[in-house]
Length: 266
Image (cartoon, rainbow, N blue to C red; front, side):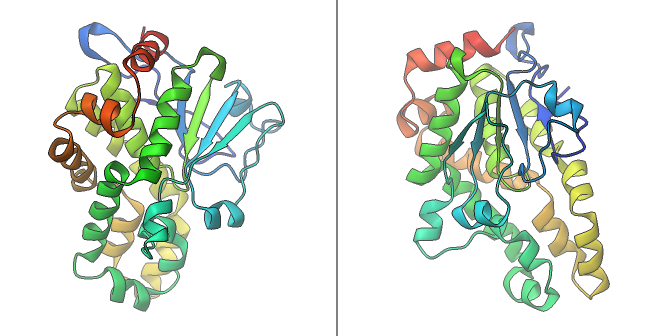
């Protein structure tokens, strides 16, 4: 069993991590930690599923360009916190494929040049390693854990653009800290594939009809075990364990971790 997909008409790939099984027969509490794609179409007035969540805090992991192109629509009573996970990669002159899905899928020739021959998998693996080893990513995931530990944060939703990569790693870190085993972590990570493919179905179809390589499209749109494994291996190599990554890499205190566990587990 993994997190629960929440039927929403205005938010893509919306999932409640509540109900995810943890060690010792425990589970994640429902309604406190949610993940999704971008919120540029969010509308609590016409979307009862979203209105019922009672969101109090939103964390946006996207780049400035992504936010400018598709700004979140946030109700006035919801706090919006921004932390650009990929800022360090962008400042280093690297533009991760995760931030260019629509551009790359609009031109099969460009996609083939930059992503053909297995390059898409290598690029995503590199991006996932950066989730662990760059300061901007560490700041983003530190913010996520610190906010989730705070009772005042209320129901919290974190997201990027498609809700699969930056958001997927955030969910992995949270669930690992709470006591989910490796099979559960991978199952939750992969479970977004149907929703993501549905959200981008029209774009994938246009790309392939224009002569684009369907393997490239799927490599961009989907998530694969090798992507998550790249980040997990980076954690093992640099820190030895997820606990040490959280405490030493993210700088999250034992007290915060204890508070997070007490608040989010049932």
